[in-house]
Amino acid sequence: MRRKFPILESERLRLRQFVDSDLENVFKGLSHPDIIKYYGISFSSLEATKEQMIWFADLEKNETGMWWAVCSKEDGRFLGAGGLNGWSKENRKAEIGFWLLPENWGKGFMTEAIPLIFNHAFDHMGLHRIEGFVETENVNCKKALAKLKFHLEGTMHDCEIKNGQFISLDIYSKLAAK
Image (cartoon, rainbow, N blue to C red; front, side, top):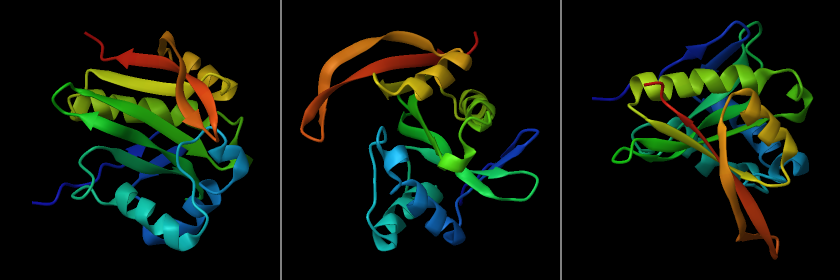
């Protein structure tokens, strides 16, 4: 039986399953230099972006995460994406991820969308822990997680190589209420 994709809503936002018509916006986001600067995935063509769209949209093929298209509730406009990666059912945890198209930055959309995702994760997916791995220099992301009351657990220094250079990652977590 096919799982039904949950639609999450707040006052201004509707988080929904990705559809084929989102392809150009996903490509626009995941090829934009200001977005991919701190993001682990980027694409150089619409064709290459199609694989990401399948991963985003198909609950049957994607057992390690769940991502939503973040849209304006008022007019349906695509704003960005948010969701969970690395879902470990055994350990009841996953990693949060999100990005917005640059014209939507600074408007509080992610601090409105992310609680919808972690509430769904805790209440319906059985997660106990949500993690955030943030490049130490990504100040905006760290500010957003602080607003959302994620706990900074520490820094993994020089733990990955990106563009030929070592980078450090700050580890954040949010636990389900007991």
